[in-house]
Each structure stands twice: as C-alpha cells, then as structure tokens.
Image (tube, rainbow, N blue to C red):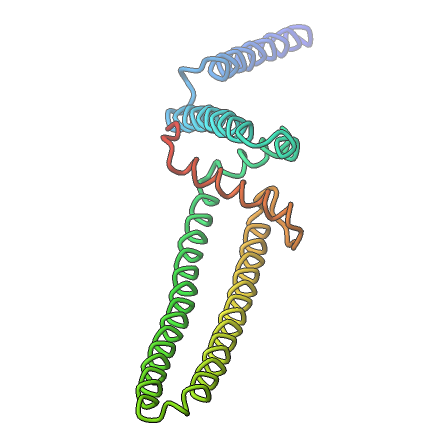
Length: 233
C-alpha cells in the first residue's frame, strides 16, 4: 500500500510540474512576442524613438549650419569657435527655449537702442534750436550797429565769444549723453550675459573683455539667423 501511495504522489507531482512548465512557456512566449505587448506601451516606444531621431536630425542640422557660419568669419576668429562649443550650442537649441530668449532680448535691445537714439536726437535738435535763436539775436545786434558803426568791433567780439561758448557747451553735453548711452548699453550687455549664462547657453558669461563680447555677439547673430531658417520637423 505504501508503494502504491508513493506512486500516486509522484504521479501527481509530475502532473503539477507539467502544468507549471506549460504556464512558464506561455508567459515567455508572450513576453518575447511583440504582438502581445500592450498597444499603448508600443505606441509610447515608437513615439520616443521618433522623438530621439528628430532630436538627432535637428542637432546635426544646427551643428552643420553653425559650422558653416563660423567659417564665414576671419581665420583667427574661427579658432575661437571649436567643435565642442558649436556642438554644445546646437544641443542647447533643441527645445527652442534659447530661440525665444534671444528673440526677446533682441527685441528689448532694439527698443532700448531706439529710445537712446531718440534721446540723443532730441538733445541735438535742442542745440540746433538754441544756435538758431542765437544767430537771430546776433543778426539783430549787427543790424543795430548800422546806426552806431563804432560799436561794430565790440559787437563782433561779443558774438564770437557767445558762439564759441555755445558750441563748447553743446559739444560737452553731447559727449556726456554719449557716455551715458555707452554705459547703459554696457549694462544691457551685462544683463544679457547674465540671463544667457543662467539659461545654460554655451559661450555666454559675464565679461567686459572686448574680444569675448565680440564672440558672444557673433553667437547671438548665429542663433538669430538659425531662427529664421526652416528647421527639420
């Protein structure tokens, strides 16, 4: 009886093993068969692959165009735009945020420059009006000397002194205005450097070195030119 019982137990265990083995084979088959993957997951994977391919395509486009633009510069300046810098900049442009930042900064700068230019022009126009009024007064003084010719040398000397004084004062005021404009523009450049550096745009940092600023201006020009091109989509 014990042997019979043992045979039954072994037979039952073997049957369970075959059932578990069959289930494992089915599960492995499902996992290895792409047609059984959840449709939503498959769609997400395809989307991700397409997104990566588009990113690579855009990166190649940006880097290629940046290299072409840098080749337009004088030889010494070309050396200041190495492959790594242009590649990093191309990568920073991928999501479009840098284009929006540069566009906004460019628009603000144009408004600021127009405002400063108008301020200077108003000062120049005011000086012209002052000089015109002075000429009228001098003309009247000269006319008054027709009756008193002996006063003419004194009047002419007075007119010359007043003309020189007005010209000197106007020149000084224009120079002061120009210096103020330069300082304001320098501050604007520094503000742009801070913003672009915080945004992680390669090649931008706070500096007053003329060569560095010139290189940064070229980078801004490159970005603006790229923004007007047809970008792969």
